Length: 226
Image 1 (tube, rainbow, N blue to C red):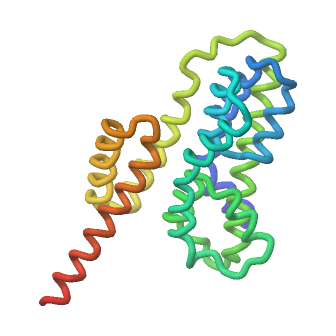
Image 2 (cartoon, one colour):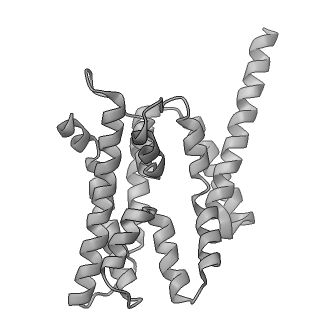
Image 3 (cartoon, rainbow, N blue to C red):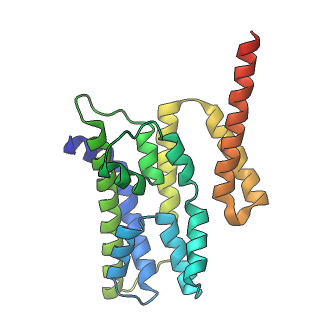
């Protein structure tokens, strides 16, 4: 089962490692000890929020400002939790860690992959989650440590996140093969970008959810009529 979990999370490894290294290099420019990046990977474990924190810390933002911004940025995880509400059973402490470790990429895998035959579902999900966080911690640590030893040009490194999400989008398309959710996401993202650029992600997810719910209600009414 360990081998299967490693194989399943391999795309996350190739995304998290360079992305974590990029974060570590950017974080090191703030002048903090390199192991602070490792601690952030362990305790915070939020790629987009950690990148955002680098900019906020560099701008001299206070703790409250960073906390509020992080809350709004990661509020999309509420929808992930609702989607997996029936998937996580009474799994004890493992369930608490799964909730903590539910990132965009882990959610993408959990919502598309099939648990290997004969494997224990809670344990398989737990291994997927802990392996994924380990990749991120390793990347953060390597990047921050390398930043203390070498001089890097960090311009453009944040694009690693975009590349990772692109790969996950392709995997979702291969699994779903239905254009409607992707069209809705595209339209919602365009509207959010035009009207709510500062909080685009939150509004895009909210709008997508509203549209999907309206379509579901409409389809149900049509079925009831016929």
